[in-house]
Amino acid sequence: MTFRSTRPALAALLAASLSFPALAQESDTSETTLPPSAQGAVETQLGASDVPASVGELMSDLSGDGVAIPTGDIAEETKVEILPLGALESAGEDREAALDNALARARTKLDMLQTQVKGSAALSGALEAEGYDTDRVLGVYRTADQAMTILIDDRA
Image 1 (cartoon, rainbow, N blue to C red):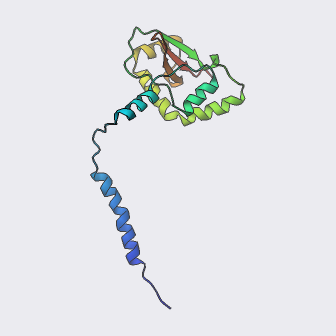
Image 2: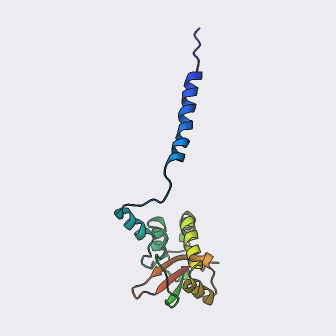
Image 3: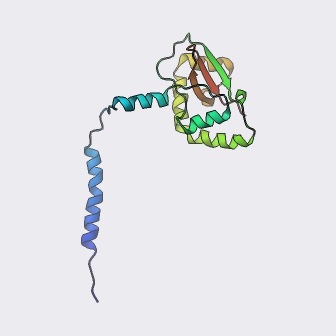
């Protein structure tokens, strides 16, 4: 009967696994610059898109490009319109569960959006005037006339 020692193999495996975190710590984590083509893609993804006409379009946006987050500063004198989710065309109550799933998957981006809305006097002021909280914001869209539309989840 032959016994082979597994100690050298385990030692090599352990040494190899321990070297990866050390390499990660040595890497430069200072400011990262994206190439111009990638910068445009990020700006487009985070930039405000067209206001969805239906719940299906909203779910498609949430699954695709993501939440509509305006880039840049929003002047206090900007015209802001509040659009309740209930005003969008819907295909029935069976879509509510699908919408809830899409919103859950987009939670991180929605949190980022809602934080940005809280920091904008124009947007948060318009919400307060209509009796809404920033936690209900689903998207902020810049319209052709440079006004802003805030999509609100008005479901109970």
